[in-house]
Image 1 (cartoon, protein in one colour):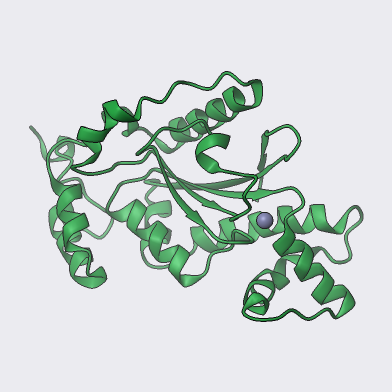
Image 2 (tube, protein in one colour):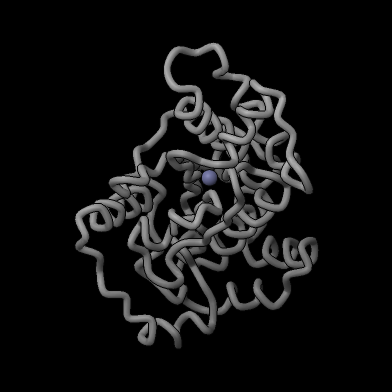
Length: 244
Ligand SMILES: [Zn+2]
């Protein structure tokens, strides 16, 4: 087998054999057990070893099934043995925490298929970026999808703060502070401010992830991963892609 065919030796963009890169990453992130699991043999779900474009196509086909009500039957029992030894999701999702979304439902995905990070307002703070770095660098996820949604309460609260001077208790201001750039960017645009800000937040988050150094930016430049996004329609369940 040539080096380029060996999943343990494929170059990772840092001019290091993947095994060494994983060891370095494990030492840095203190994730030795998880990384050892990722190193073992063949990926548990070979059907998830696909290109970024194929991953996006698969996600959107899953969303179409969800919209039509023709979801697949996911046999979790059949996956358990393979997934006990590792994971290789075909996509990573950065989604709002809103209880009406459910990325596994929205994309009709099975266990071990999507690596989901959720936070109200679906923005990329350092912990979210670190989680996505792990999914890309260690688990080889070929796609990051930023999933916003209609009527997002976190974005709406930010609008109330920016436009009306509203203030919020507890730690909620940390959310509205993170979402303020998206609201300010579209404050003077025609149309519905909440709709525009939700879309802008997805765009800004895509751009932030694409340029997050050193791991995600490198993976994007090497075309190992694609970062895209969309907005979930609460009434239809359809995810509309957003172009940066
Ligand atoms: Zn939301």
